[in-house]
Image 1 (cartoon, rainbow, N blue to C red):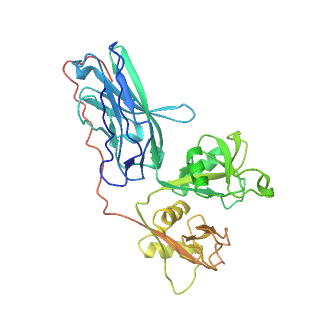
Image 2 (cartoon, rainbow, N blue to C red):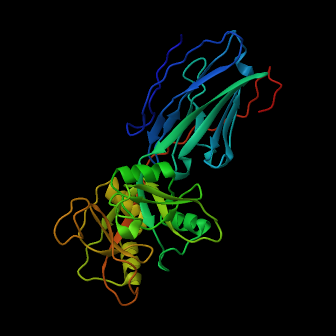
Image 3 (cartoon, rainbow, N blue to C red):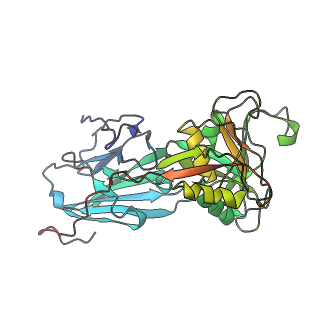
Amino acid sequence: MLKDAVRGAEDDDDCKVETSFSFSLEDDTGAVIVQTAPGKVVTHRGGSITLPCRYHHEPEDVDRNRIRIKWTKVSDAFQFEDVFVALGRQQKTFGSYRGRVSLERAGPGDASVIIHNITLQDYGRYECEVTNDMEDDTGFVNLDLEGVVFPYYPPSGRYKLNYHQAEEVCRQQDAILASHAQLHKAWLEGLDWCNAGWLEDGSVQYPISHPRDQCGHKDSPPGVRNYGYRHKEDERYDSFCFTSNLNGRVYFLKRFKKVNYLEAVKACQRDDAVIAKVGQLYAAWKIQLLDRCEAGWVEDGSIRYPIVNPRARCGGPEPGVRNLGFPDKKFRLYGVYCFHRNTDVQSTQAPKETTTKPANSTRSI
């Protein structure tokens, strides 16, 4: 019995592994045996995290230069995206992972990789495959992000978005379409929203914490209502977006007078900032605990304000980001929420990949 514990993260204390794991070696046939964490690893956007994976091979004196390690991201729709592959000293990363992924190299049998500068798109399930000649085995690791789910509809109104448009509006607001797991977690934390929205897997769902007749039926149990998978081009709904940690700060710009939308944009620019996106305001509310009982413009032309500690005259008894809709941009006057990006963050990119091939290897990666 070989036992090992998952090492946690890497460059900061905010990244963590939710569960440890052990390796049970009961096969003496010579097959490669791979083990990964049965739970999930958790980090946030901008952080670094180890995806743990270890392997064992009998006999143990196998030529390490003939061991091939491959990491692949697997979507809910069973689409596969190459992430990283290594054969001996030769390594290669793919697509958006270039320059951000490296082997942990914590000793013999370690196939773990470190992902640096985590993005929202990195969220999901990863496959670790280890191959030695004709033998191979795989394991899976789930990467979760700390963040916040928020419902979104555009200025054109409710139920106006097909799936691809829902993807785009989330991206425009510094977010991605939420997964079912992220929406379910948000529901457990109290999210209650009566309008159905797209999720990243192409399903349409909505979370109900307080059943009522206009949201299904008042006698139905609380839960996440599911319309199933819908036609991505023809059907129209809202969207549920997900965002994570900010590389910067959202703040309410103090001014002597209120402004229209165009004046709000210029005011942030004069303050060496930009007008905040909806996702940035939600992240500031959830993660940075921004609490401001003053309505202000945000990037999509809506008027919102974040409340962490509910109080009289601040929009109800529950915490959240209040939404006053999309007023006339020219004639309505409000404050403004700005976003100032950090510029002093040190790079946490992985070392440049090597392209040197091992002398005794004849197999291509």
